[in-house]
Image (cartoon, rainbow, N blue to C red; front, side):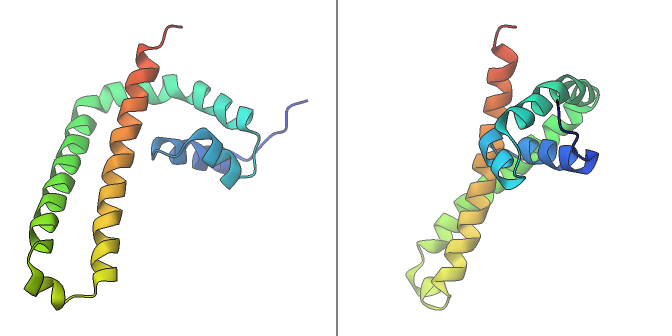
Length: 124
């Protein structure tokens, strides 16, 4: 019947989902059936929501603060990138990677928050 997986694998999968990875990506990364990862997510969410509710305000503020700082940094970077003389002194590959990583992380957090909101609004 069901195949038992180590708790460490389950925990890593749940952490990856919370970090914004999709079910399909996590299943592929850990070589697991999609249904297994989906089931873990469904079963873990009430526990995670309960823990988040206890720490929700503090965590929510930290996430908000992080996103605000990340967006401000992206804005500052964009303004700096407009300085052609400054750009001439930099390795554009490194600049682009820094900007891309910061933007990607911010977008992933926003997407995860959006998915959580959709899940909470779904009937059932």
